[in-house]
Picture 1 (spheres, rainbow, N blue to C red):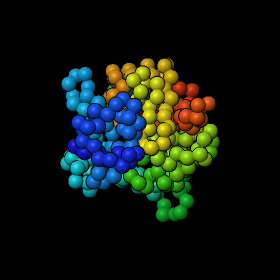
Picture 2: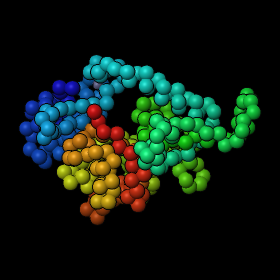
Picture 3: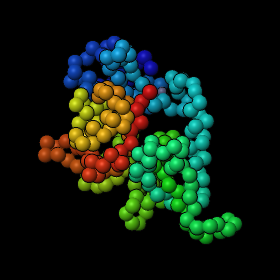
Picture 4: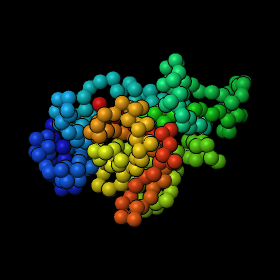
Length: 274
Ligand SMILES: [Zn+2]
């Protein structure tokens, strides 16, 4: 994407003029970049030390002219189907918070996507109420994929078991960064969306929109994340998709931030932008 539109100052930028902004302007304006064709959220990444030039990127909508062709459509169809299956079978999703660590330490490719049945099944009957409850386990990676690639999952009645009782409907559990408002303050949710960038010390992940909400990353969590995602510098986080479970708080300075439960690395999943 050669040109990005900034919704804070309502200006179009090419990469050279955006890169020439002073540090404070850049840090402010990069939070609110969109694709000028489809208005999807975008991001800016600075020139990297290993020679990659500065660039804009965006999560283009399906029919956007600027979307690069690839195999993504097939993957999206599969994810939509996955959500349909969960929904029509009245499955309850058990969140496997530790799935990322498990899958990395295991020899199987994708242990978290296996659907397990809580008891031995006879035949499926066409009744409104299921004969037994079927639980389906999903890790944060899988949840973020469903949130990102389908409109239906985030607003669905699919029940999610977070480990506390009772299960919570997806529509009451997940909050997109753009939807954050006063009513969420002091509340625990699965917050998700795009971050524009991290500060150089990676103590804050700044969410991509005009609200100045950030995710607090304390040292212990930071060290874990840098290792897990092989991150060397803050710029690698520009434009990443994120799902975190935590509480929205307001600092004494008035800054809004999300604090991850006990700084638990199992309660955050990051998909680095390509
Ligand atoms: Zn676009």
